[in-house]
Image (cartoon, rainbow, N blue to C red; front, side):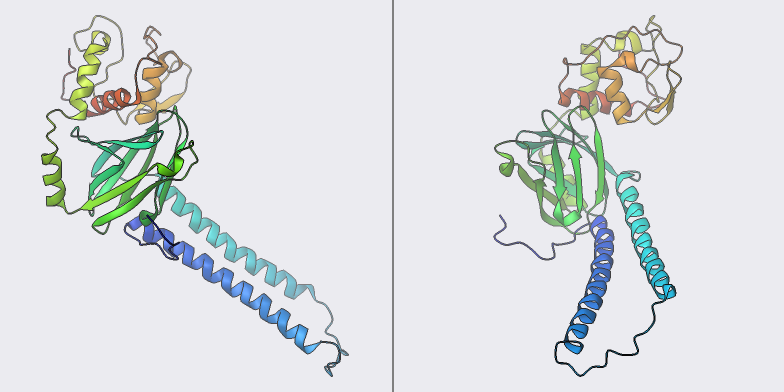
Length: 315
């Protein structure tokens, strides 16, 4: 637990370095402007104080050239900072191809983590160093906010949606994980740790968890248990869209819109299929809203994502 407020938190991810550079530039520019204003104000106060012998005659006539140039220069500098910040924002929220994807569920008052191999954690996240980690996050109850100060990443986790964020840790060690959105009486207890390990240590940790079924395999079991394979299976007689190779493609819907088949789209289709009916198919899929928990949704999505063009759907 922190006993003091760190002036400069540790920077343990590439995200932190990029954010730090912008922060230092904004802080430095603000310091220059504030110092200039304060120094000029103090110098005028001293020079033209009551009783001063400084001449008040021959005042310089006002000119708009100086004011226009000063305003344009200031506007230009802050526009550069704005564009710089916007570029970093887009960079942070458009994840590159991930080396590993981890599912995170916020719940009063804990973080539940599920790895692709089926390993589970509570209030902890083990990851390898120097790898791009993409987090797919959802909430079971209220709005939470996933925050790792040493990585400079923070993202709200909103019920009913899937949020994603990524990072690439550059140092091994244990780093603080916080919830920064007030989420109930015990909000202050909702914290954990991110453990960054070397690749061999991480592989050993995964093996030691004693898990025998991957997240996608658990999703395949759910796919069959809930009857999804009866319509989306290769041998099904029901006219339903094929899920093989679906993830990441463009889907044309009956209302004329086009959606990318990403995590959020798959979740929406499972919970509210008639609002996302694929063009050319009848709206016959039942609504699974309220029948599946966030854990089960994550597994089903992991299974659908695992389907490749050369794989057969489970029956």
